[in-house]
Amino acid sequence: MLSMKEKKDTSGTTGHGTLIVTWLALLFLTGLTVWIAGVNTDRHGVAINIIVASMKAGLVLFVFMRLKYESLFFRLILLLIVVTLTAIMALTFLDVLYR
Image (cartoon, rainbow, N blue to C red; front, top):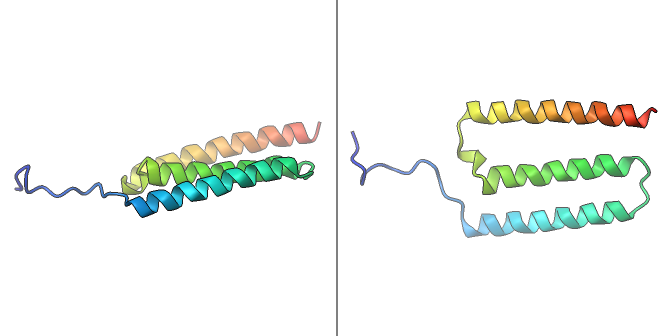
């Protein structure tokens, strides 16, 4: 059995380069969201912005909240929650779209 000093840290660390690249990706995706909002895309603009927002949320979850170091069970439960919320949002948008 390992003592406290000998115990290895299995949580992993995120390097500065990864954080900077993630931050730049978030800035790019935010700019894309603003640009799409200004372009006349009719009904597709909302769907595109939701997809971009989901990508930004995924980056924040996996890099800044360190989800990539969590267990597979926890990630699958989170995926189930995200899929459920996405289905609810999609059904809501379909209802509004066809009124």
